Length: 369
Ligand SMILES: Cc1cc2nc3c(=O)[nH]c(=O)nc-3n(C[C@H](O)[C@H](O)[C@H](O)COP(=O)(O)OP(=O)(O)OC[C@H]3O[C@@H](n4cnc5c(N)ncnc54)[C@H](O)[C@@H]3O)c2cc1C
Image (cartoon, rainbow, N blue to C red; front, side):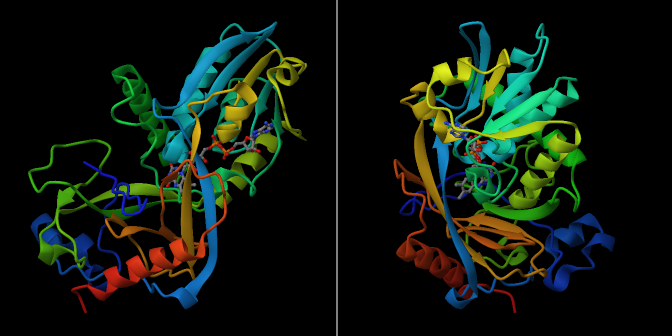
């Protein structure tokens, strides 16, 4: 099972890796037992402050009881909310947006409005179009200026509810959303949308046997000889990663190609929303929903990333206690912090230095030449 740690807000999510880098490149032709015992030489992350090409900070829209997909009447307008996905919005996007469109579209006739152009607004708009409706996307900011652009892009939702608050019903709904999203991302995998599978290394709390779980394809527990990390209880599985900037830009392209309109506009009250000509409106405003609709449960959880010079030889990801590393074409992402209630979306130099140092130290303990 994946876990999160709180090393001054350091968060880790899921992960695992097939040995594509380093000395295990011939593994595909070997029998299964030999694959497991192959020396775990992976390309090293060159974690050094002078390789940092940018730093970013974003505010995850977090609700302890989980994200909101709910319909309400606003005069003669039907409003469907789809916001509050915390640290899992990319992973949950298609599934959550499908829940929202299933609430809004049946029995609706006429054009549809979507407010917000992050991952939730864009996936909602695409699903609305796929169902045959005309859509207008209203938004204060477009990619690349959304929180969704900041995301690391691992397709495995973490940090989107509090264990002691979320209900079993919410969790079942979230699992269904994550499952649909995984299937949708799978059929979009490839360079065009910037989605690829990577073996990912993760740590579990205990060292007991692993139960089969479709969320972790190919998951195996590794012996210390089977991986190079100075870490205990390491497992490896495969999951998808999205280069979020490219993905969002492609979705926006798809919406426009399918005839969708895009209008830059800020909404300041529910009355602004009710005044739209469209009588079905999806609210995908992320953290913006706190002010716009008075949701006091919605709080920011700041995440900061240090991005290093791309290293194409990194063909794996990890999420260990030291932090997480997602290698992308636009840089090697080192994360990350998890700071609840922090509203300033600015990278903090000391936190960034700590992140880089944590990964440098991890690499210093590498036990593979
Ligand atoms: C550092 C970091 C790493 C992350 N990594 C991952 C990851 O690996 N995997 C994962 O699944 N998730 C990850 N996330 C979480 C993910 O980024 C969010 O859950 C997701 O981006 C939320 O998307 P959204 O569309 O709801 O919000 P946003 O992307 O914030 O979009 C909201 C949109 O609404 C518009 N808007 C807001 N208010 C108004 C208004 N009043 N009027 C008009 N328009 C308005 C905004 O301009 C914007 O276009 C990460 C987040 C951070 C910060």
